Length: 286
Image (cartoon, rainbow, N blue to C red; front, top):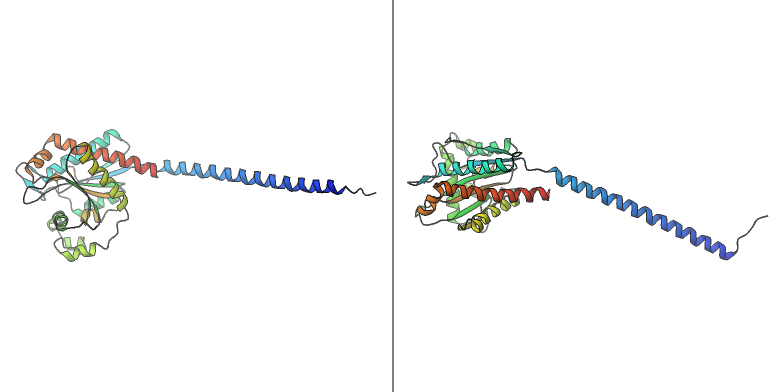
């Protein structure tokens, strides 16, 4: 004998089945979403902890037969080398796990392309080229930090700085071959350079900005700002790269400051503080 449930009971059972089905579905979706969120959060943490700043290449501009800017109170090649070594020692002391590579540690001549090659071979995370500025009148003063590029503020003064720094290649053997026919005194060569896009520009501008802020805010020096220009030594690097004009050695007061131990210590300390901030920012972002 078949027992037929009352209509109300059948309706109740149907509702209960639907309710249970929806409840199970909701729980399944919630648990699945929770697991995925947990995995994604863990992956993000793992990704952030994977990147560590490993290598910096510090380039003391000029050297050897390339004296750079020269005045009675100091020469660019000596000032740049001293600041570079002081900057590197600060990093060594604070971060022994970071490899510090110098393009030169003495008064030797190193081609511009080789300076970039040193950075590329060592797979550097950052390339910093240290220089002193110069002007025939002797009146300008202040710091500038450059990334490779060209912007709306490019003018004759900035172009003159690029030409002066790039003219070092004229002291090299077979420079036409090494730099694909680039002529540091030819406007056409710089026009061609303008087509090159630096994939590391944002990071280069970030560290450049931090350096100029240190010079201006902590050292009370006159910062002429962050700029972009077509420097050969930056063109051939495969990582964020900057060129720091630590001041005008042609200016008597600023030149003597740069040639002094105290001045060099202060410049190196500013570079280090900016590097420390950049390193922290980079590692947190990755």
